[in-house]
Image 1 (cartoon, rainbow, N blue to C red):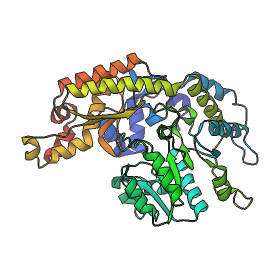
Image 2: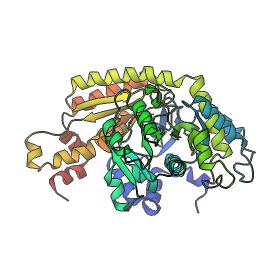
Image 3: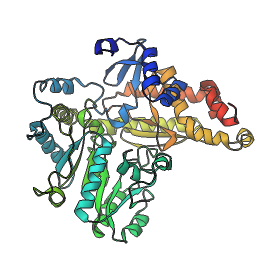
Image 4: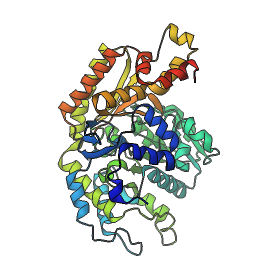
Length: 458
């Protein structure tokens, strides 16, 4: 057995060896391909340091989990205040969970009021789906193509990429998809009158940072109510200030029947999530002594997580992080669009607030024809990761591609980021695209394994 004190002093190679031997061996190899297996030993705000003392800027932000930054001191101090309290004691009502529920109800749109606390975004989605079915008595759940709602069985059944679903079929029945941002397709499906709920991300995150047309979410709300379905907003990645408002559905003045919140709810310190719904829906689902224990979880609403949540919300509101995200996001989008005009490798810049995606052009020309289109296919799967690799390994900037569209890298820093830190990213991207005029050149420099896959060599 390795003690904690010993673990804190292990070097990078030892950590890699432990993961290779006892963890996800293939993931170790994948991360090693792009030198993404560094050992990070310190984090503060937007900055992190590796075991060699190198400084990095975190523009990945835990996929939206770090809106308040790494290890915000106020959140840490708040957790320390409850260190002597029982963390969870089921034969009681946890005091701080009640306070956090109150505070969430105060900041969410519409009549959302009753909370159920869990530990992850996928767990929040699972709870929301169960509420929809028990409340409406209908079987079908509708989601959208390109969506991402998690990888547990119910959430996976709604996630919009076949790659993640195929190995686990059959999935949960009566889960259908319509195109994102397509009101006509949604209404056509709702007309069957068997739909319990439509779940949608206000902005598709893993789909490549896809923003719907103005008015789409309000139209979704109205259509769902017209046909007796519930409207579930998955705000797990977009919520708590990320897009320039507290919740992204507020851009359309949309009021969901159920909202899923996770990631930054605890300041990125503790595993925490929740779904929140209206009093009417909650009472139909769990509003009796016979039903109140139909949906439970052991660690949900524990004292440490709730304390972190209360503190994180205080920070978000006190520091006006939604407004900062809006202003700095507008600046970052403007600078990225300037790069797009300069560099042909950039196909499109998309985003709102500090949730921004950069999509790359696919290869064209003779080499792609020689490879039988394999160069395009490799670009679709690896271009984002290669750019992310250059950013991290050469310029000390951490980011990653979006899961459902790997040809897009995300820029999703903590909302406490500064203009000067944004400028460092712009300068790095400018240099990368100036030095690498094509996917092939970047692939040759970064990883021979990818070139081998393009031309069929082992």
